[in-house]
Amino acid sequence: MPDSIVIIPTYNEKENIERMIRKVFSLPYDFHVLIIDDGSPDGTQIIVKHLQNTYPEKLFLVERAGKQGLGTAYIHGFKWAIEHEYDYIFEMDADFSHNPEDLIRLRTACIEGADVSVGSRYIKGVNVVNWPMSRVLMSYFASVYVRFITGIKIQDFTAGFMCYKCNVLETVELNKIKFVGYAFQIEMKYTAVKHGFTVTEIPIIFTDRTAGTSKMSKGIFKEAVLGVLRMRINSIFRKYPEG
Image 1 (cartoon, rainbow, N blue to C red):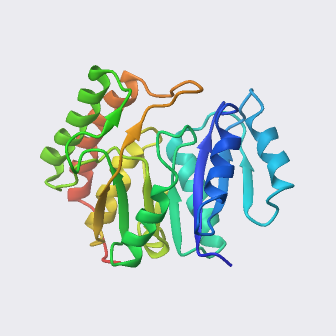
Image 2 (spheres, rainbow, N blue to C red):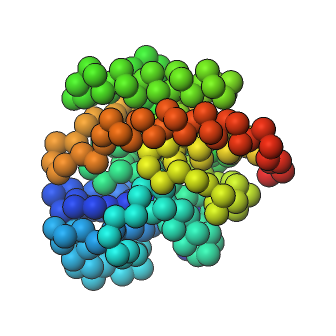
């Protein structure tokens, strides 16, 4: 069985999901794909079910009732992947803002020693295409702020294109992860580092979606800013056994 699975949360991604699935399966490495769909009213899950006839042993679908948050979708997917004994577990967006071809680079980084590899927009300058400047600045300075509060030198704390070795996800106590929005990405990286895992950033070019509707909002970033302070304070009173 292949050792790698790509988890893709979806909500109303009918314009993108078939192209994304076919692209991942066209790569020179044999990835499996797990779609976590939060009751998309546009029929995203119907497209996935149809494609399961073409990829019956490689494409999996979990359907959830309604929008329950990005973090809970990934945690559900992580537990599913651990149960099914995958060694390398990826998170990626459905909208092609993440280039599927970079999955191989993220996997290679973990094979070569990283416990977690991050597709980083900011490790080599600012590599973002088609975002308005206001959103670039919001994202960039969110990571600056998190580095200041936590003292951890990850350049792209809010990145959502990642590869985890399975033992990282087995160690970090997923039930204790509090955030459900995009702050989830910050908490996962912070918790992995606190457990002593190595996080490596791999430079990528992030391209904003050209189809479908963005789920990002200023409220999501506000959650992250306020939540980071709580996360840092709570971590003072928590023990993090090394993985």
